[in-house]
Amino acid sequence: MHLQGPFEPPNGALMILNPKAKTLVANRRGSSVWKVETDSGPYAVKVGYPSKTHTWTALAPAREAAVLRQLTPERILSAEWEHGTWNAQPWRHGDSLYELWEPHRFETSPPAPDLGEALSCAAALAALHEKGWVHGDVQPAHFVIGRSAGTFLIDVALAQGGKVPREYDFSYHGCLVHYEAPEISGSVLRTGYAVPTRESDVYGLGASLFISATGSRHVDYPDDAERWEQRRAIVDKPHRDVNVPGVLGKLIDAMMSRRIADRPSSIEVCEELRAAM
Ligand SMILES: Nc1ncnc2c1ncn2[C@@H]1O[C@H](COP(=O)(O)OP(=O)(O)O)[C@@H](O)[C@H]1O
Ligand SMILES: [Mg+2]
Image 1 (cartoon, rainbow, N blue to C red):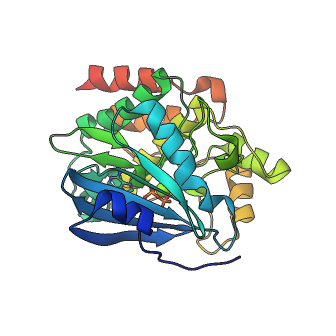
Image 2 (spheres, rainbow, N blue to C red; image 1 turned 180 degrees about the horizontal axis):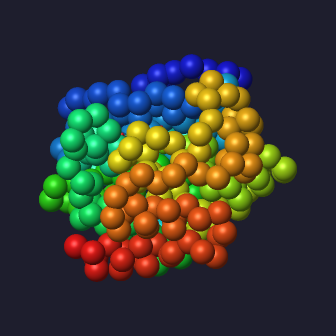
Image 3 (cartoon, helix red, strand yellow; image 1 turned 60 degrees about the vertical axis):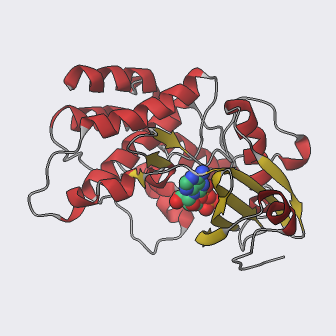
């Protein structure tokens, strides 16, 4: 079934959360996300449904809830609804890395990117890795950088590392190609599937910092190219020159190494950034 959305938070969610207000934040690729104000603070409510290209998007919120419950003691709600599953999770305050670094992309003489902000993103990824998890969908919209709350790496729907109920699990088909490591693109092209790793997460972090600082995708391919053509380019072509100055540029270049073993770990990225500050 192909549905368009957006879909309202289902009754089950409304009954438990009893929202005072709700705002639609995103609706794309089989997922409607709402910011919901409740007596116990704001929540993000994600409503999953089958998308044009995938059916697993309907299961993603329940899968994410199962992952979140292993990562945080906070209240995570989840259930099924007519067209799929939904979850509710604490709302993370802040701007995404992509929003925060907008001045670097548009101002004529922008300041150098803030190493502390880059470090907070690397640290959020390293914290997940240290818990034994791989994120699998690292992208600049998924780093929420708060002034006081710190930086959160959101959207763990594709994360791997613990147990997920079989009825809500699905295999990994790659992530957003703009942040996809060459070995993941290659595997998806060959088999339709891939295995996300800490190293592919680090590649995604490099590509996320790069696009946020420069506006350029890691590899040069046409906007309107089919997904498989974009993956072909990621496999066949070197990544763009990293024209970001200083330590950050060198680190982004290393994170996007084609040779997996040459990439620094997320912990090493943190150490290098800390040493440069
Ligand atoms: N817990 C959260 N706190 C704050 N914003 C969130 C949260 N979850 C999702 N969002 C917002 O909604 C957008 C889409 O959510 P995401 O989890 O990436 O779902 P999907 O990829 O299914 O659209 C995010 O980029 C972010 O702006
Ligand atoms: Mg997402």
